[in-house]
Image: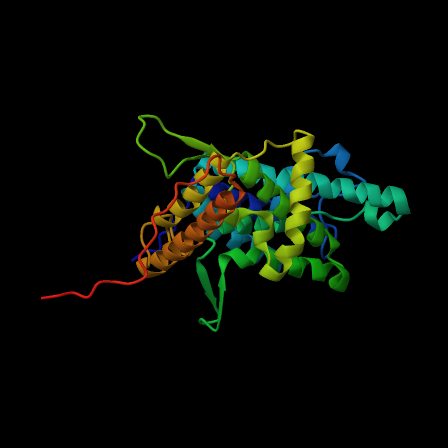
Length: 344
């Protein structure tokens, strides 16, 4: 039976662009007799990229070695295929544009500032390219859609839930910066992570899954669910420190009208949306979306329901504790302390 690879259109186009741009860069490198060299018209180089503004996009789909190319291709193949089917091609395109352009542009600005302060020619000629920002963004999207999905590695010797992947990814790239000198991966991973979270948390408009029949398609803006809060990307011991900091930043953004504060209805709808996603039959991470093991999906749905119920219970308890009674409750009838023995 011939092998059939069924890919959505945008994912297929991104893979082809990754291949073509990387091959084009490699051909110029061979002609220049340089082992690893990025073409200024394809990659971001702070000292030259003002002439080539399109590099804000092309740099994300350019790899200069086989290892990074293989990682990027696998990421686009599985991640792009999953997200494009879970959303739509149009929504996936918006997401890709946000999480590639903004991190690349900000990283370019960081290196320009770095050069201005230090005068280092190394910073001015740093090559900024690769799929790191998009990889971080994909992990954030997976955390939103299937946080309790368990991925088995090395023949199930290592099992890790999807919700832990973003923190592990940015931690590894943060360590590789000072240890291996890959500071561009440090900036791109964190900026990709933050850009994806901010977009999905506050701005993306999605169909409302948990809704009553109204005759019209209901939508929800952002994701105000408790489990998608910034601190929930990190271990419980760190959440105690991150919660006050994240709340302060959130209040500052609201004060400057950079985002709209979440209402109680929005939070409740988002919590219902998170629970409905687990029951809605999203395609499996490692399959073509037309089938898969139902046991893992049921376990994931149960975990999501348990988390949603726990979060709802906490919010109801907090609301009940904060509510001030307006009138005294009616007196309760006194209970008798003894009971009459039954007689035949």
